[in-house]
Amino acid sequence: MLEIEMITKNYPYCAFDTEFPGFLRSSPRDALQEVRYEDLKFNVDRLKLIQIGFSFSDKNGNKPPVSTYQFNFNDFDPRKDAYVSASIDLLTRNGIDMEKNLREGVDPGIFSGWFTQIMIRNPNMKWITFHGFYDLGYLMKTLMRNTPLPSSLGGFLKGVRVTLRNVYDVKYMSRFCNGLLGGKLGLERLGSIMNVERVGISHQAGSDSLLTLSLFLKMREQFNIIEERYEGFLDGIDMKIPVLISRPLPQRSIPILFPRPMPVVYTRYPVFPPHLLPFAPRVIYT
Image 1 (cartoon, rainbow, N blue to C red):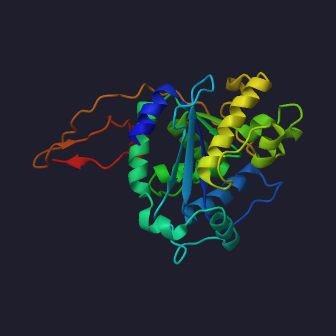
Image 2 (image 1 turned 180 degrees about the horizontal axis):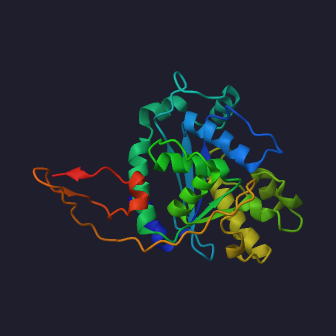
């Protein structure tokens, strides 16, 4: 996490991907966006994130020496948690070891505390997804420490804006690029058409995030894309993520005082503004 925090200062473009235990409820192709969100909330609230991957670059497409990080979480247990068998079989065939994750995986609560710090200290990051509605759902749930997602699509999108600020969806962008079949291609097929070679194994979040980032950079160059025009749009969702006006985030740590006889409570991290308090790491008592 310390490495990632240093990386994001010079490489603020971050593509991410998630792996999760399937869909308990699927949305029809012609479903309204409100129905799609109801299904997303139903699934994400009941299922646990298995793996997340991040890949980084700067505005010009340069990548750091280590550009991709992949986290396996330790709280999904197929013996007691909900899942779809076909999805777990697919992830297992592609190298995800569920038993090893239970023994050696990352605690999602610790992850969310550290990662929230990174986002607060680097508020101008750009987040890149591919067909990222569910990726955003699982990331938001993890950062909120498994709090249920908002009840409405509008509330969810506002939360995404407050938390991530700048979001792009490569699948949505591909709709407007000649020769890419109007955005109907999956990640693997789009990479093949664009001659972007995958590094690693498909259905591993690190490899998928790196392919997503590489496609974003190549599409932007090859089709002369002005990226700002596509910011805030997600594939399958008609409304744009709303733009919110917020004050700059404070960057220094200060003590939080409570009435006596409570002790003074200090944080090791920047002060959290009110709208991010649900995502704040636990305070350290002294």
